[in-house]
Image 1: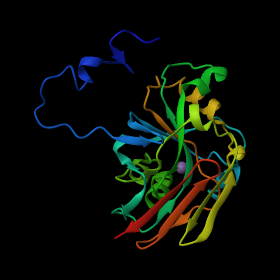
Image 2: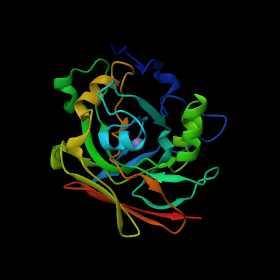
Image 3: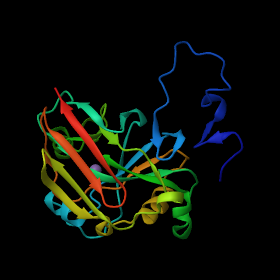
Length: 249
Ligand code: MN
């Protein structure tokens, strides 16, 4: 239940850029993503990511793809790289992996969203990369530690412009692929997701109050692997968009 003047449990006077006259220093810019066909950009609130949402990828990560409840991790909103382009090879890793994913952008929030209403909360879709410091993630798994260092680093979420569902439709199926230097590494179909987009929204909203501007990275098909400075990554989702990223030193 949404209280007046409260967003995700926080009174708006602590959130709104307009109601507060000054800060002790200039706030960081609000992360935002261009929208296809319109001048206004989509302001990013949070980035939720689904883990192991394609059976073949779950298997390659050594897990049984049986339909246990979905699990999530998060990236900071300012991890986005709108439009892709140059991404700096991040520090602290020697095993940076690509994960090509369908990204869902919400324009309506809420808690306990019914499965049948979930798609009405979707503003549009994009193609994104969940860049992963796999060595740090593997170490965290082994030690029972959080995944943040493996997943939630600067520039870890390159994303194309958003294609509104109102004009470009929803994407329950369609080929998803990623090539590195012209060689196809990842291939799958959106229809192979273990948890569909509506199911993911409904489930997530039982644990968080979703807010307009939230993004959901919906998981990656099989074929993840390492990239190096100088590599060119091209990811594509059929009938949606293409994302191009150059890894630079
Ligand atoms: Mn992922």
